[in-house]
Image (cartoon, rainbow, N blue to C red; front, side, top):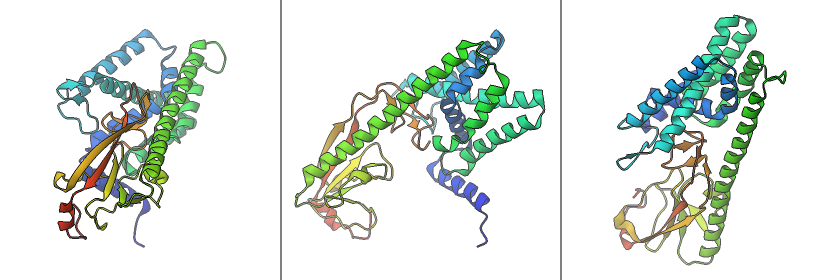
Length: 327
């Protein structure tokens, strides 16, 4: 049909990110962050056994990266500041992940230059190709697109270290710690999913039989558990809204718009899901495992705030709008 599948994917990714105001260098930062965070065990194993000078260079690189991210007045991909204060936890996460990601890239290049074999060339092309696709061809940077990179990085590490001969237990310890961390992050993601499910079911039961029309916004899991007999997806351009209608908007969500105050008769906030210590996707924290449009961190360790759900009852002013126009 006259369309290049590969070139079109690059164009689509560029257009989408252009509309969101994300610069090309933010893509690279997110790509390095997702590489380092997603392949943390391999990156740590790469460091073990190296001379002290390598460790010193790593520490200096981390410190410089942390200072850079913390000093930026406005960094589009990550809210590094809370009010006038720096979010040091977010900045530290990002500096560690980016440094680890850069380490994977440097280690791959070093192996290729040192060995100059077809196997190293294949592994380097494998790793570089996945990175280029994940960063520049996909609509956003997401951890899932980096999964094909893991086997190549693992093979590269096995070919260049002694982890397989049992003489360096520290490398086994690094893999064990990374496995525990991976399970911890997976638990945090599961806990978030359960919170969304339980809250949606609470709204299903609470509004069942309610004479008011109940709508919801967003497309990040809540709609899966919303009972279509109770709650209906809001089409912001076509749904005719009436006075007394109820609108539910999960804050930690996508494809949701704020209702102007003049159309709101009453608004309540429901909190749920406190106590989570690992976040894979959390608005305002920088965690964006499924899309770096939420932030350039594949995950964030630390206490997560409760999930917020805004429950809004619409005022009579909403009926003054034309049904075909969005509020």
